[in-house]
Length: 200
Length: 284
Image (cartoon, rainbow over all chains, first blue to last red; front, side, top):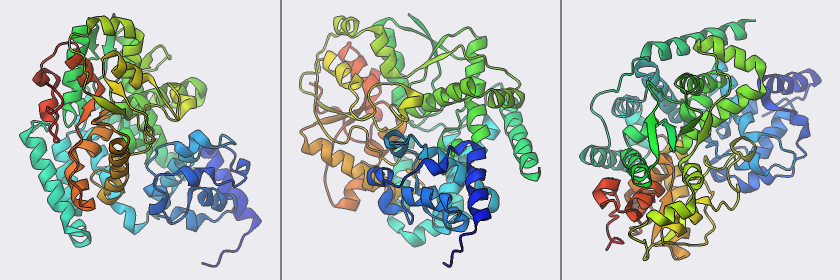
């Protein structure tokens, strides 16, 4: 992991994050309070304050390929407690967006992204979440990997799914709203804008 | 009291009992809920983890509809939805460029006229003494760990609801119902939220610690006001027990179920028969 800190790289990464609404990364003085209170720190490769430090130093690859940015559960404890009022959870959102755009999502965390995609696809098609369809979609994409990692997970999820059906917690058909075309248009327009912004 | 009502997707599905009990408790208290017509999903974690613009535009559609349908107050019981609706409202109020972008994307300009309430907000606005006067069955044998989690109180600068480290609103509500709210340490810890299916190890570890602390501090029940918290603590309790080789059976109630129950609803009318962990044991 040879990292050469070049002035330009440092400035451009910090500026990119700040332009996206990330606040002034230079504000962080590395007290570590965010990492001390982070409930998912033990699942991360970089601790939250290290992520901020990496952004300050222009260590783009380390951050964008990290598991941390996808492990972050957006609980906002870090943002709530930061003595400099730096919005770390917001920074994580920004870094996820860049990592997504550049195709650097950590392999071990891809299930989380697959879940987000299955969720949004369902919203785009129906206007609301169709939970049964979304879960099937996600399971079809991930069952093989999950089974290889920990077969108990599939069993527990199957039990949970059956329980939800028995307790009538899942609908069998999507609840298509009148405005579903409107919701689809919102997705289309957002995609178009994001594309043109990147090409600028 | 007439209030707009945004149920959100969960309350029509996996958190059906939250929807049932919100509606039942409001009926018993005399709060008139009018459902927002043609509401759509708020985008939840999936949107804000992948696209900032989408994460504002999806809630903005609903805020704009609420404005057009004449609601100045909108109840959003799901903590994930209320968090996204409030965040979108605030960001658009503070950032004109974003507001214009979102208006172009949705085609429905929003002028900021809607106040979003979570369920606890609504009950406090209705008034605790008014609630007390409606209680017909005191929840005397309930020792409740009130679990707020993340989205109800954080980030405080945006959400502006209760104390972010030691909130009291839910504790006051359950006390008004005759139950005993206990002191405990995990009130605002995270349960793993929306990673229920995508990262079970993480969710089961975090949720286990919450259940363990609640029980250690003497709770015989946990109250929540968020479908993600309920799914992780109730639906996943069997998987948590299996992972940690434990046999815990701690009932997890939506606070709205407790309000409805105390105000005279039958257990079935509150929806607690839909819980995975038996929740009848405390009801005499």
